[in-house]
Image (tube, rainbow, N blue to C red; front, side):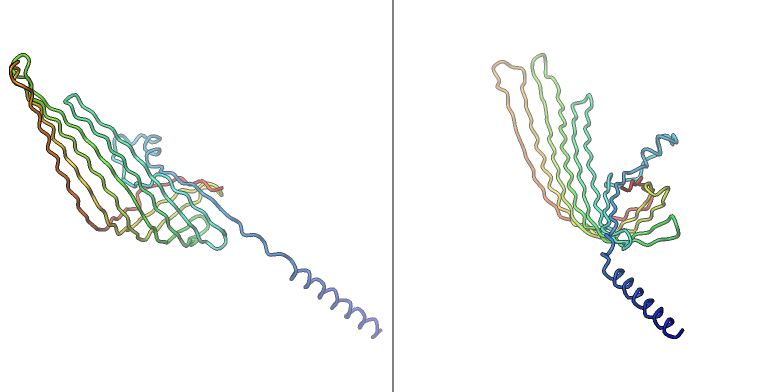
Length: 241
C-alpha cells in the first residue's frame, strides 16, 4: 500500500513538472494593435438636427489618426491634419484667396473611467501655414476716353510652430465606434510676411497725352508668440479598426 502511494505521488510530480515546462516554453501572445480614424462631427450634427445658422467652434484639425502598438498598455500615438481653401469675389473688383494647413503629432497615455469612458493625457508638437492674397481694383472714367484706375495687390503668409498638452475624453458607443472631445493649450511662435503692391494707371483721354503708370511695393515681416486654448466643444466621430 505504501509503495503504491509513493508511486502515485511520484507520477503526479512528474506530470506537474511536464505541465509547468510546457507552459514555460509557450511563446508570449502577440500584442493587439489598434488603429482609429476620427473626423469632426459638429457640422454633421448641425445638419442632422437643424440647428440653423449657429456659428461652429473652430478646431483646425479636421481629421485625426491614432495608433496603439499594444491595446493593453494604454499608450497611443496620434496625428491630426486640417486644410481649408477659401475664394471670394464681388462685383466691385475685389478678389481673394486663402489657404490654411495645420498638422500635429503627439503621444498619449490612456486611462479607463468606467466601462465606456476613457481619458487621455499627452503632449503635441504643432505646425501650420496660412497664405492670403487679395486684389482690389477701382477705377473712374475721365471724359469719353480717359480713365484713372488703381489696383492694390496684398499678399500675406504666416508660419507657426509650437507644443503643448492635450486632454481628451471618449465615450464608446460600440466596440468599433466612439465619440470624443478634447481641450488643448498650445504655446506658439509665428512669423508673418506681408507684401502690398499698388499699381496706378492714368490717362486724361487727350490723344496727344501719353498714359502714365506708377507702381509702389511695400514689404513687412513680423514675429510673435503666445498661447492658444481650445475648449472641449468639438466632437469627433471615431472609427476603430
